[in-house]
Image (cartoon, rainbow, N blue to C red; front, top):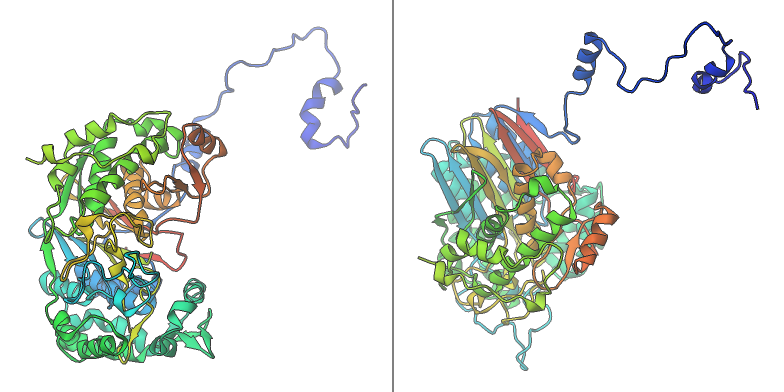
Length: 597
């Protein structure tokens, strides 16, 4: 059929019709199609280069004089205000920590504890600050077992017996005193203002309150703050915390003394006694912060500086990176079945060691050097197969000794002088125990669940612990919190960390690997689908977004793949050539990365 050659031929098919509509000329040779690209002008090439100038798909915040990244924009702003006032990264971090206790009450806290990694530019030091909670003096090894010797349902989570001696106030004020430059009252002013004046409840916070209504609703002091009309606050409701504002004012004026030996401590001890809890005034008065030597590793020429026990995160982050160093994951590709298979198998081996060896080094010996030794990692990596998942039942803790010789939040801060701070602190689950100590406005943790209530029995995050993490008075429970600094040529290059319970270690691992092996900026790394294996249960947990082909390959290897809810909320800063790139994980829409240009 001859095509129509009228004037109304559609433009899209015009070129196809030209040959049919043109009048043949027998004296003109027909030129065959070109086999090479058509020529172009230098101007066109330059114009295309100006248009296609970036490989980045997700773009972080950019600054030169300072960057603050946290899970709540109001808290990030508090930190930025300190940088604007001439403060350093520690001033900003302390301001963020106190502000999060107000605006992120499910995780930010005064009644919990955590870890801080600090790099000080002036003396080129890396310090691991441990302000983890401690077991009360009256705590006993079997306090969560019933008369049959089984773990009593909920006792270590949502009762007064679940509360460990809080460390956050001691930790934040210690950091400010040691490395900050501004007065404590100045850095706490934004938090006091937010508690006194209030702020609108976000949809994210409203959802968290609704999901924890059963546990929080048991406590009158909690309901008085977070409920209205017999129901948890809803999105758009105004949250004012007068008692918390008063507690913050006392701390701003008197320091940690107000919390541990003053009016706040007396109220906490009285509330514990009233409800059958274990914490006494003596427990609070005896609490101590500890400055520890960090865990240090080397990965592809980068120096990884991270948290030691009672965090398990630093040891196993370095252990897994050591296993990975011989693998060309950069060429295998981010999110490929080959990369995920190898990393998941390495995760299993590390978590098996965690269950056996990790605990508070003030109470039990932990083979730190053996677990982080490269020869031990090479021996473990040699057991990993490229196309076969090893069943968890076949894995046992390794033998490092011969080589010896959710709910949580994270924030990151860096300044122009080269100081960097990574802080992860927690109440454990959402809103901790759910208890507010009457008259203080302070939510209390349920960190005692992080101990091994009974060896071999999993905690709320499915983690199995052994005798090394058994309960003892004054002992700090094992944690997965992994605030981490990565240094390049001796200067901070990456500042990162995440909440996420058992999944913190693997989330931070993937943030580091995405930056070093795959060249991603912090926003791109945060947008990558995450994966996690913790030995038991024998399950490769993945987020949505991985290719069906990749998942099919992993299943063919024997991985028990389960697509489950989002994992972690990284808060990351990357520093390249004097420019800071910050990204707050999109998994929490309330977060923000704010910088000084």
